[in-house]
Image (cartoon, rainbow, N blue to C red; front, side, top):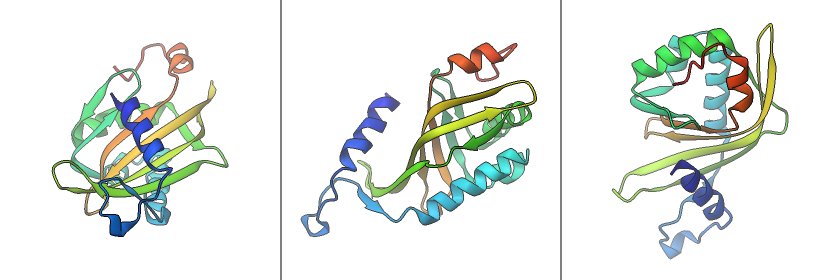
Length: 167
């Protein structure tokens, strides 16, 4: 279901509707502020500073993984991050692409979303894995992350774990 959502945003983002047309489609916005939030979150993650990472998330946030696992709530996200940040350092490759959109959902609530795609490297002392990585961050009105979803091939990860920490 999330792949469909991602593809929908990719297709919809190809058009920038005329604001006067009162379209229901999301519109492209300046990505500077949302990219800065994402960069700061990754920096805190790579510093193993889970508390700082969690400051970027709404209390009711969720995080979805390509294996179908959904982590619900800030506390559960913190527990997952405590494990994963101790395993991997995460680096986004030069040339990461971003697209920021804003719109109104079916419930009449405004949203902002940052789409990003490019290579991402997960490394530790023993292993370095680079994968094509697609990410979606939905933001609340106060610029907290409400939903984080990553789309990537987990095959190399599963091979690198003694036990998969995302289950």
